[in-house]
Amino acid sequence: MSYESSPHTTQVSILRHLLFVPEATFAELQKDSDLTSDHFTFHIKKLVESGYVEKTATGYHLSPIGKEYANRMDTDENAIEKQPKISVVVVLERTVDGHREFIAQQRLKQPYYGFWGRLGGKIRWGESFEEAAKRELEEETGLVADFTFKSIFHKRDYKKETGELLEDKVFVIMYADTYSGDLIVDFEGGHNEWLTQEAFMAKEKTFESARDFINLIDQNVPYHAQEYTYDTHEY
Image 1 (cartoon, one colour):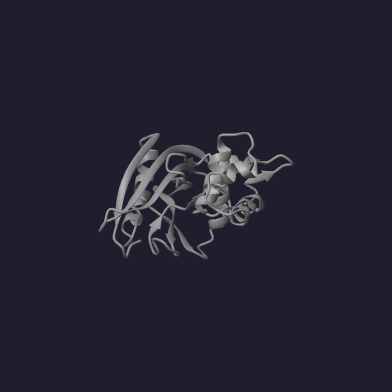
Image 2: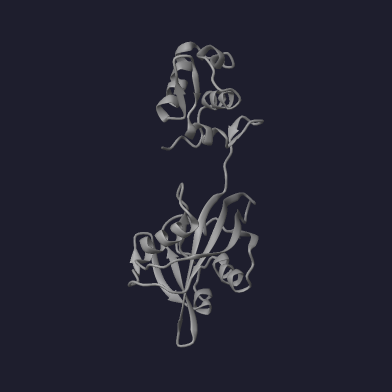
């Protein structure tokens, strides 16, 4: 179940109030607002319908998913905090004629359209790193492999012209060097190829971090953070 990324301030206030009490009545919750009963009823009903607040015979309390959602709140600013995205990076390696090759992917969707990088994606709720890596590989390439954890990479992308933060991501780098299946070269949103590091870096537009992922694995670096800048037309 999803919820608005920018909920109404009244709904945020309700969630904040319920963070600090086991339960509250309608009157207790409405007291902190300047809304009429009808308007306030609309907002608390919205939270109940979304599954974040549960109504009982004596009042209202946070549901289990409501507790998880509201716990992301900055209680000083009275706002739900925006958090970094957490994704897996899939590094699959093979050796051909003595040359190391890695699965590379050209991104054919926004943002960063046309850039080459390593494949991967967001870790789903309740999914292990190993499960996420295996799923992403099979979905995007048709290949099957079992992965092991190698490193954490914190990547922050900034707009070159203004310094605005564009993306804040935490990548979990997962590695495998054995696989089965036939490679799907093209799919909606991307194009896959086996490339050496040199061939990868020779592409017109590449994510520098994709080169760095391999270096971190080779050097057994458990954690690395780096900032990158992009022109407006690149993002």
